[in-house]
Amino acid sequence: MKFIRNAIAIGLAAAFLAGCGGQKPEAETLIKKVKLGEVMAADSVYEAAYPGSVTATDEINLAFKVAGQIAEIAVREGDYVTAGQLIARIDPRDYEIQMQVAQAQYDQVKAEAGRVTELYNRQSVAGNDYDKMISGERMVTAQLKRAKDQLNDTRLYAPTSGFIQKINFSVNELINLGMPLATLISANQLQAGVDIPVSLFLMRNQIISYKATQPHLPNQVFDLKPLGFRKKANQNQLYRLQLAFGPEARTQLAAGMDILIHISYLKEGHEAGLCVPVNALYHEGGKTFVWIYQPENGQVMRREVKAGALAGEGNIRISGEIRVGEKVVTAGVGQLTDNQRVEPVGTVSESNVGGML
Image (cartoon, rainbow, N blue to C red):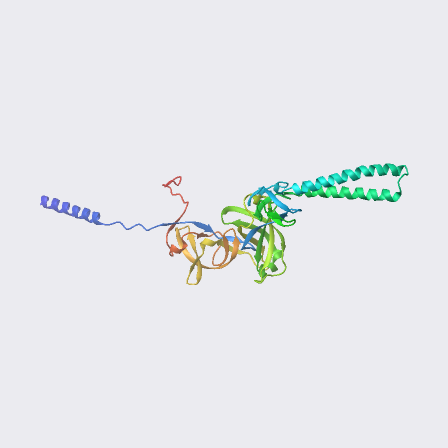
């Protein structure tokens, strides 16, 4: 009997162990990693962004004051030149001869005037003859000065520092006086031009700041200073606004670049509200939602909101059953479900000290 009892006990124990070993553990629930933003209080400052372009303060046509054959063009399109730098020169031979003739006439008349003046002082020459000689001296003096000026004008210099945008002639071509040889874009200051709608034009006195960004310079923000509005709308009912860059923009930007101009303004009569990062919004069925993170259980809950205007710095105004300080998901918002467990990016567990895993 004792043998039978031992056998039964062994069998029951084996059956129990076999039953335990056959149980399968439940599959672990997938925990999605998410980025979080915060619901913040928004003041009455709004932001609008419009496409614009960089323009030069001055565009100068460089032209000779004399005509002739071009002997040299000392710059190329795109070159940066400084004030006083040689741009081009005309063959000076004709003007050198002209100056030599004027110089010879001046020397002759000057010598004759000296003799007449001496005789006049001795009262040996009539007053009319003396007056004619003085007039002749003044005339040849002016002719000599003009000949020297024209000879000097065979060289064309940059009136200010800037970039050569275009050259219209080639060496050995004939050019007349006043014809633009080249176009110079002044580098003294860059400007920005943008067209704004009537609504913003009417609120121009509430504008508090202007900034510009360039798509290929993502980490650069340029401050702008308003120069003035064109008070007549164009055919699209838009008003032209001119702004000036600071001197630091000259090393990064150039005339003709496309930019985005951000205009911050106050809206009178609008109460302060709430704002969240733009990426936190989730649209479905014609409605707008955000995912609220609940730290007590690590789950997210969808909540409907109403989106408003941009609030600057990547935020957007919202209204709804939401409070300042609540956390919202800002990445992967289209792949979540109600009550899904998530793990905020950057959270360090007790077994992952230092966040190395």
